[in-house]
Amino acid sequence: MSNNNNNPKVQVKLSSSINSKVNSWQKEMLGIDVLKSAKKNLPNNVLNCSVFTLSIESADNAALTHQSIHKEEEVDPARFSTLIRLPKHTLSDLRLAPEVENQVKKTVDFFLVRESICHEWGLNEIQPVQKKIISLHGPSGCGKSTLAEAIASRLGLNILVVHCADLLSKFYGTGPKNIKACFEAAKQKKVVLFFDEADTLVKKRSTQSLSGLEDAINAMTNQFLPELDEFKGVVIFATNLITNYDPSIIARATQIKLFLPDEEGRKQIWSRYLIPKLPLANDVVVEKLAKVKGVCGREIRDAVEEASCYAALRSQAEGKNPFEGVITLKDLLNAIEEQKKYHSLET
Image (cartoon, rainbow, N blue to C red):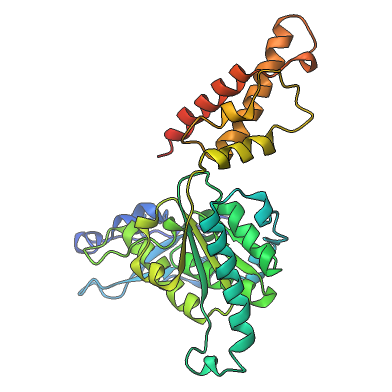
């Protein structure tokens, strides 16, 4: 055991019977340092050590308890309050299929009217907490994150955007505490709570013998359920992989499925991103570009940027100013095909 106050170490000797009970989650997934020799009882001067260990209750029964010997990480809701901001988008920024747009408006308006009638009509007697949970799912790049922001705009609320990395920690038990803290922050500030790429956070729970990772996933999902049931605000989940969700999450949410745009939708998206300042050649016709199937708005946006770079570099290679470049139909078609290839690697 080191006496270095800046970086104290605790060493624990594990018998073979105890060591067999230490799973990969403890050893690897959470970065727990299991060292080779130490004392059973830990003195106070190591309580601030930033590691986890295993305490041995008895050499006879080799009972294990998860023992944090670092000063327990405080999870303050204020940490998540700093992530709250105004939504960046409205429904007009999206090119949704008419049936999807109608479902979104109906769902949001339903939330608003239900809140106003629950007390007057006594609905809060049969459902004390009015659930307002939306699950957005569909292919990568189809606008789920943008739609979450647009929903917040329609509700007239700020948004708290939470990513997996904001919740996970190498320390045992901190992930569920982070979940509780972000719900508390959303409650205090009365904002929309948006979990992006949520399949990592609410993955199907395993009922089989658990590996370390499965154990951690179960703990996260188990924390989500009571928070969702007690939270009175709006929660939005987004994923490309709805089949990975735990069934209990699916059952609690209004499901909104997004699709890749059809030809008319692609035409509108191309028109939006081919802004007037771009030096377009005469052969650039939106109708021709819209014929390219299987592309999303993100790919079209990125293709416009890529084609612009093609044109500038070509002009530069010809000994001219890059600003003299002209974007051709071929540039845009090549760029969109490249985007399709690139994003196909994600699936």
